[in-house]
Image (tube, rainbow, N blue to C red; front, side, top):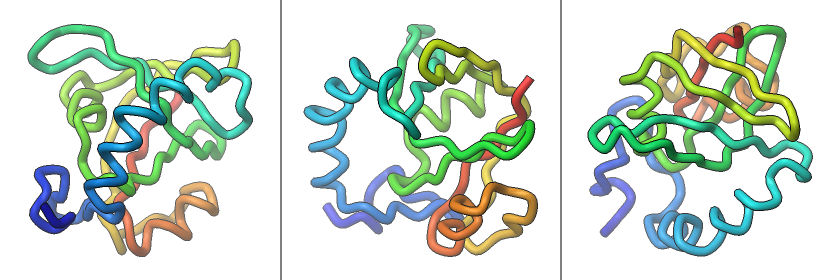
Length: 136
């Protein structure tokens, strides 16, 4: 299946990475990264609740923070964790030993107005959607 036909490929939030890479990352890379994320600079874990299962999930992400704004670039498109956090209206993000609560989640579409976001997120927002939330 091509990235353009994948269910994660939503309007304004294109799936940039090929589906084969996504499967590899979910099956092999994420379980390893989850275990060592708190020791890796630039990596955090987002704790969110499933929309249907109500189960708690943890997903490793690469967040960028500027003041009280947290931005995560969505190279894999509109994935389940994004849908879960949008539906719940918030989540927890674990940076090492520190946990922050995020609220007011929203998506800035690819090529949209990324003004006020951290520089790395603004740079990548030309081609990818960006998940943005406020830090409490």
